[in-house]
Length: 356
Image (cartoon, rainbow, N blue to C red; front, side, top):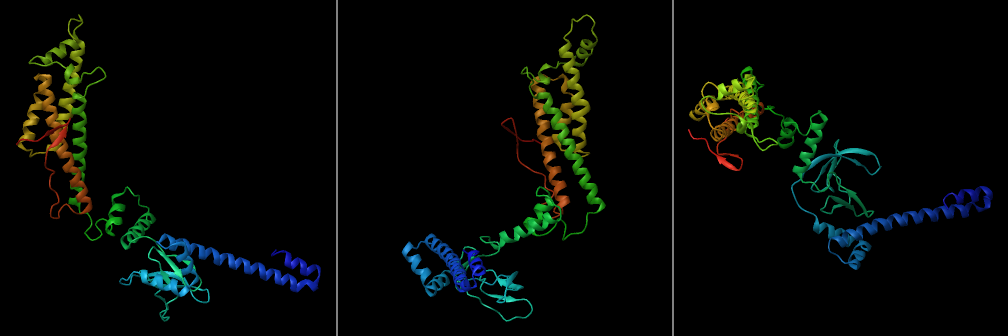
């Protein structure tokens, strides 16, 4: 119909008035449909707030009553001024500071007098314009101030190329500060301590992996510890079994004994010595001696020794991880920092405690 009116006017100029009337009628229907759509949205909102359909229709038909209803629901609070882009009465976009707790109160940047448009905060992150019956979604609708701050920090951190799994990203999102932002840069001593802690983590992980490989059962249900020989002649037995051309000796047991000795003496024991350092505890010193002489022990005795060694290595692993993290984050030298984790460690469902 909108395209029909100009066509009628061009065919017969005498029908120009008829075409313009049709065009005006069509525009009127469009405005009426838009107004009805806004009214329907308002009715739906009011019904969602507990009003009946009749009450909601009555409210929409009476702007003063609707404005009063919104005013009573409007939450009071301290101003929360934020910069926003608004359009003035001439339709020009201008910067303004808006009270997010009461968006109807704002001030254009540049000295314009405070202006209070007929906007009402519905209390759920939306604004109702009582002048024209339209709805406006407020920025960050439905978010608290803390949630808004966190959202802004996430955007800023991502803009700097940081990933969510990065500790620096997580620290900034939670605190608003980059790691060590309010501290001195890492010193050479700090860097050396971090390197030593990282080496301690690697050494502990290596020891734990090696010792677990000895006592973990294979597909046949037996572990390397179960297959290896024991007793005062275990070393000699493995040597003879490997070099016996007659086949009278158990080659499998000899190979298992040799493999166990290699893992224990050249791998696990050396790693434990490095992570325990030059000043081990009495318990750590005792476990080192036990491991050193574990070849002659029975499989049950060896398993007990290896499990206790894993427990102590796990404690050192936790301590060195915590130490490296606190040194990087600048909290190691603060009160409560640098403390070694205490308490029993669970292995195989049992709670193991170190006895000094």
